[in-house]
Image (cartoon, rainbow, N blue to C red; front, top):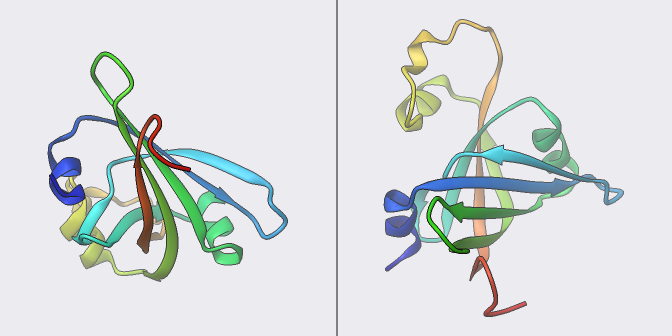
Length: 126
């Protein structure tokens, strides 16, 4: 099964970890990634610490834990490619909301990453 199919069907939760240019780490809960091809994913981000860290350090790690007994999931090692501040794009990929209902005035970015490495949640690699 390829990664896009896996994330389309898997249920669970994810943590996106970033670090600033001096190495100070942050971790935040994020939904499943949006796939554009097998090597390019994106997350919708607000202007918070994760987004700020990616402006100075393009590397991130995404840990996904499946909602089932045991320890199943994926670890994705990522490098930021680019970002777009495009409400139409955000609305088109937002899975769980009617994006047109957002009136909070907050800017949302679609941040694109290349997948450098994908590993299972536990074991099989370094």
